[in-house]
Image (tube, rainbow, N blue to C red; front, side, top):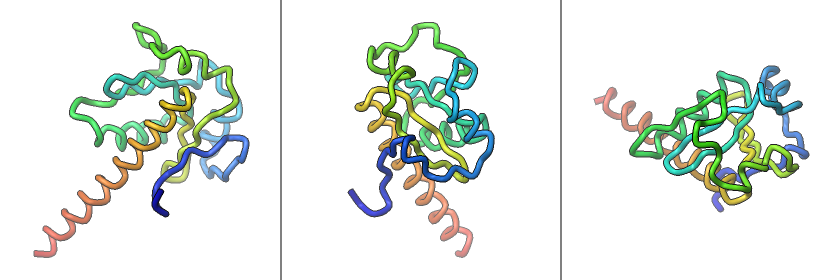
Length: 139
């Protein structure tokens, strides 16, 4: 793993999260604070403030041919993965820093890792697009 790649962190380690709304949501994940990220074939519960979850979704959206969606309610089809479905009761969660806030992926370990990897890929894509745009503007 490279030095700039994400690795899911345990919420128990409690890295600093500057956003008060994220801290509040992370402190007590409940039905009101859990959203659902739909990305390709994945449906994964996530927690964070509305603004940082939207930023998280937008970055993940750069990694799909379709679109990443964020729902504030349980999707009509439910959560297909049994591990992700029960993840709100577990203790292992992936905290992913998002521009002064955080998103916590509550899915099973495999899907936590997949989402963290997709977010990192989206971050690299966003940086490359910004660099390309800056190069184009300077011509």
